[in-house]
Amino acid sequence: MIRSMETLCDAAKARAKQCLAVACAQDDQVLLAVENARSSNIADAILIGDEAQIRRVAAESGIDPSNYRIIDVPDKVEACRTAVSLVKNGEADAVMKGIVDTAIILKAVLDKDIGLRDAKLLSHVALFEVPGFDRLLLVTDAAMSIAPDLEAKKEIIRNAVKVANAIGAENPVVACLCAIEKVNPKMPATVDAAALVDAAKSGEITGCTVIGPLALDNAISVEAAKRKGITDPNAGHADVLLMPNIETGNALYKALVILAGASTASLIVGAKAPVIITSRRAWRRLRLHV
Image (cartoon, rainbow, N blue to C red):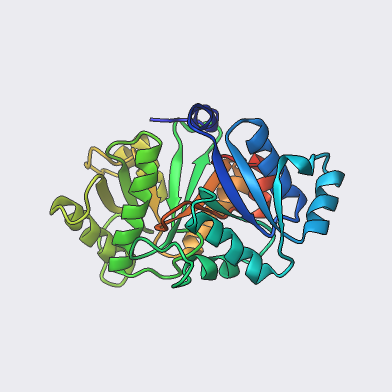
């Protein structure tokens, strides 16, 4: 299993170079991320947006725009639709969000005519390298699913397993995070966790081991699990952290980046091609890993 962002980048460099369709690319952090991917031989990019602004920002950032195909689409809605269409038509391999609201680009991704919907549900998967931690962690869903019900959580797990498989985890351990480690009917997340464990055991959810309900500490720390008297042998070994709701996911995402100094990469899974949506703060910390 890939255990660091550096190793992840090395793996990406060893593969055929990809092409990103960047919607609303007129932003310095976006262009620096794209330039880093290009110079690292990971991905080329087609820049869609206000061409005059793209060229100005590129010049101010020391980036040669002649290395990129630029498509002049000043309107942000149309820029997103153009980016998605390029992927739909096979001219690019992934959609990447520039300086535009996430809702706008997702509307294009989900469009019935030009869109890329593939799975029953699209969900956000974030990959973290936390200083001092021995492995990469996947967190889902911290950005899209507001209050997923049981069926939605099953789809979120299936999407996350695809990402875990892609970084070498053949049978990832998925921990259903809750405030406590026992089922409490007054706490729906714990009830869902137990149902998800059963769904995995019955074969309804495949390709992973699901554990829970668990609090964060005993999901990722064997010692913490032992101190709590948890006997599940997978406790403390979580590869994927399933969030009970978007508030928990958002708080954990920002705590890992801002307080713990984690590097992160994230994307939307469930479409026919990757949809790269990362916060501006994450751009500054990591630039880009695809």
